[in-house]
Image (cartoon, rainbow, N blue to C red; front, side, top):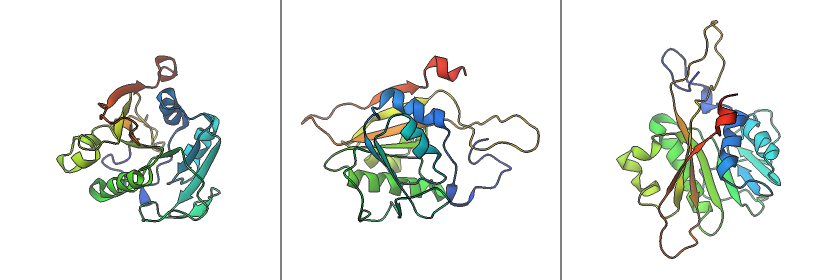
Length: 202
């Protein structure tokens, strides 16, 4: 099912574990092998484990509360400082909590942009039209860090139904990517698609 479909209560703290195929789709376009990655809303650890399987050298895991998965620190990513033991990070990757009116997701983006001001990249899994809102132009069309998005051509099933009906999610998602600029002239954001057809058919 989708995250917020009619008839289903919202999960507390927006805990929706990300399936491994969505991380594999990100890895089709973003180099993960050998990278040190910060999973800043680790939850039950499904994304962290998928990142390790995709070849990450180290996945540093934090979350605002512990949910049974081993964390490097209990930490609120939207706060200003960094965890004291945080190593040099190549990439921040997570499926953030959206919050009421998607305001918490915006805070995740803003906090991530502060942390990649000098180096690294940020990749967040968000609704595919998240860049459409006029109140978020500072994060996308007006943001020199916005690199592009990877549209998922397969819909995510966030949780299994228990009423015998087949899951039929209606929500579309994409990976949105920001990177520290390396050129003096801003490059236009790139649009990509994943997963590859062979994976999508499985």
